[in-house]
Length: 325
Ligand code: FO1
Image (cartoon, rainbow, N blue to C red; front, side, top):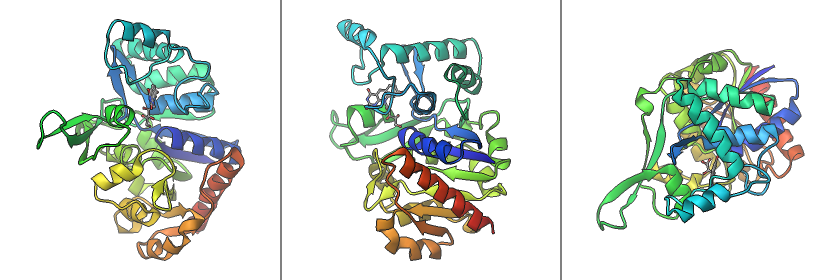
């Protein structure tokens, strides 16, 4: 079975772990969001790709959900001692090695897809990990400028999330460079030639939204013969994790499972979804999702452990079979 998954960072990686438990023999391709990427101290950092790589390769920090287990922070401390900014983004010593290899390969002229493939060899990944694009795309968030009352400014997504903890109003989300970006090698084929395309409970705006926004990807998703099944990142009126509610508000979408389903839209009506899993606590929304033309089902969606997450992955694949019929 060939499965293709569009994924952000922590939510996507957790879902992938469950998927691997549910279907250990599946051929899985992951198309990762790269719009969270940032260049710091001359190093290209790709948080979502690395979160997938470390999680599935067994190197992730279990406590943080990002970066490396058994991490040390000497480089961060030394940079701070030199007064180097930013100090709010933590690059651990082990993690820095990844960014050094990536940056050196990019500087030598390799594309991000080739670099990611090379990095993944070390981790013996049980999936093929592709960036959404080899081109630079960066999410910026428009906020009120605290230094200039009445004006607004755009900051990098990482500053909004890591420094400001998404506690200031996001007025607008911009994916800089997206309009000129091309899907990375292998991405369109992975969408066209799979048996099921899955949208895990990743952020629908700054993770899956940016992947779908790369010219060519949304059309490929709309045209694939595979069923497209999504898992709601919203349970009740809040995100499973992260700041999805804040960035959904910035694009005028309510934080409910049904509103996110309508935002993605039914493939039959110009959108990208055939099926949508919501949490049992949101079962009252099933009717309105069905009215939008999307096959919906309510199952427990908290990815509390690997067994429960595997059950979610199984439910998504069963829904795919029901939709296919
Ligand atoms: N998240 C934080 O909350 N604080 C950090 O200092 C931080 C550093 C960091 C370094 C490398 C990396 O791959 C991820 C890192 N993250 C950090 C996670 C990341 O900012 C976000 O969670 C994702 O971009 C959102 O998917």
